Length: 316
Image 1 (cartoon, helix red, strand yellow):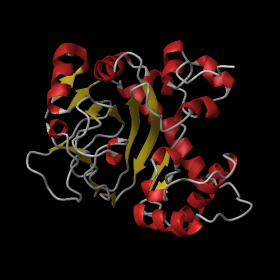
Image 2: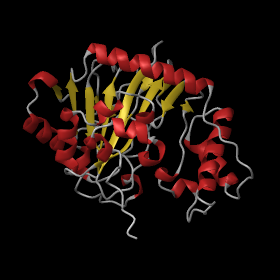
Image 3: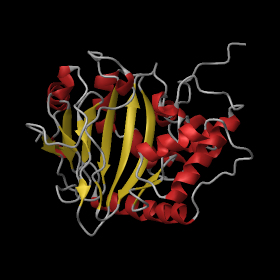
Image 4: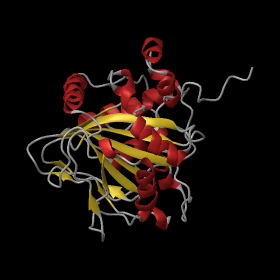
C-alpha cells in the first residue's frame, strides 16, 4: 500500500505515486486532539439530525413520484420513513425550481440534481450534508495545504470543491457499495477521458481496518480508462486502505473503489471531500446554503473552493 507520513512527505514523490497508482494514504495529517475535536462536534450534529431530520412538506404530488420512488427503492438501502423524507426533499427542491421537469428519468440524471439519503443501511448509518455550514473546522480541512497541493497538481490551480460531508457507518452495516468510479465518469462512454476530472479524499476519524469496512481500491485501474465490472467481487491486486485515525486517503475519480462492511461493534466515521475541475458542475452549491456571516469567517482560499468567485457572473 502507498503510505506516506505527513512529517516526511516528499510532494513530488506523492504526486507521482498518485498519478501512477491512482491513490495514496498519508498518515499523521491530523493530530489526535484535532480528531477528537471533530468527532465530538460531528457526534452532536449526527444526534441532532437523527432526532430532527430534514423533512420539508410538499404541497402537491408530482407526476414523477412513481419513477422517483422506484429509483429510491432500487438505489438505496433505506427505511420506509427515510424513503418518504427523501421523496419530500427531492420534490421540495423541484418546487423551488418552478417544478421544471427533468428531460430524463431519475436513474439517468446526474446525481447533482438529486437528494441522496441522510440515513441509510436501514437507518444504521448516517451522512451529514452541507458540512461547511455546520462544522467550524471544515474550512481548515478543505484548504489543508498537504491536500490542496496534491489536488491542484491533478486538477489545476483553479479547481473547486464539489462536496464535503461526514459519514458514520454503523456497527454491523455497510458493504452495500459495489465497485464504482466517481461522477461524472459514470455517465461517460468508454474510453474515459485521459485527464482526471475529480479527486476524492477521506479524512479518517476512526482507524480504518478490514473489519470495519475500510475503502478498497484497485491500483492502476485509472489507467485502463474503463469502468469497473459491476458487483462486489474480489479483484486481483485490490488494496484495503487500512490506516490510523488522523490519516488522509486520496484517489482519483478514475480509480476503481468500493466500501467494505463494518462487522465490528463500533461506528466507522470519516469526512469525505470531492474536488473537481473548475468547469464542472459541483454536487453542492454552497453559496446558497452558507450564511454571509459564516462565509466571511472563511479565508479567501476556502471561499473560492466553496464556489465564491468561481461561479458565472451576472453579465447584465
